[in-house]
Length: 299
Image 1: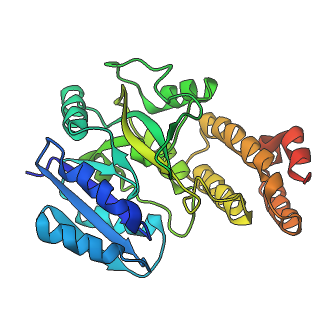
Image 2 (image 1 turned 120 degrees about the horizontal axis):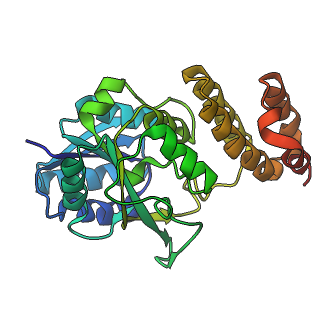
Image 3 (image 1 turned 45 degrees about the horizontal axis):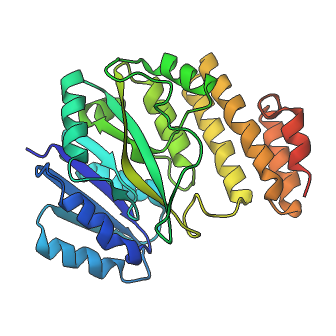
């Protein structure tokens, strides 16, 4: 039986794709599958996928016109058969051959809904660097957390990291929740991981860095902040409030939207009135705060 399904949305990452595939296929845990979704790449990513598929039958591939990471991941989830799901960015690298085995055994031992771990950073020139603290700094290993208390703790220590590539998720749990990625937006992890966390009662952490996450100019992390970033964060806020009116959601929105609008001063000035008007109409000024609102309109 497949123990871990590794889901990889792929879009124009040809220079990094072989390294990513090698780090997965060389894992000591052999009972895995890799579901690669080519999301309309215009480089030679498709050729690399096919080359690796011929070498290793554990790779399953799909191709679609460019629709974004959410749609690609949802397609892969429909075909995943593993006991656990790991969603890996296709330009990332696992830090060693025992990553998936260690995570799988730890999750099984603790009957976890999901586990989370740490990361290192990888520049395009392959120089590691550190930004912000690790998500596990204020969390204990071998201790079960429920989602609401864990999110409260992570928000209070400003250590909440929503990215899905730091999670190993029990597949049955995901199916019970019927949880998918919201299509057509960036920052979709903010919505997916927050809903997942608040819907989970058995969460564990491993205080180890298991993935090197690449930061490059074309990636979401490396992209200049634009109106689209702002609009997508506001969509995340809309959907979270639709999901629940739990006070922890309001706390999360204060934590998130104040930072988003503070950073949003980089958005072209012509786009700012429409973004601010949307936030005001939605009643989000109470989350953004005066300081971030004023900063938003500076240049």
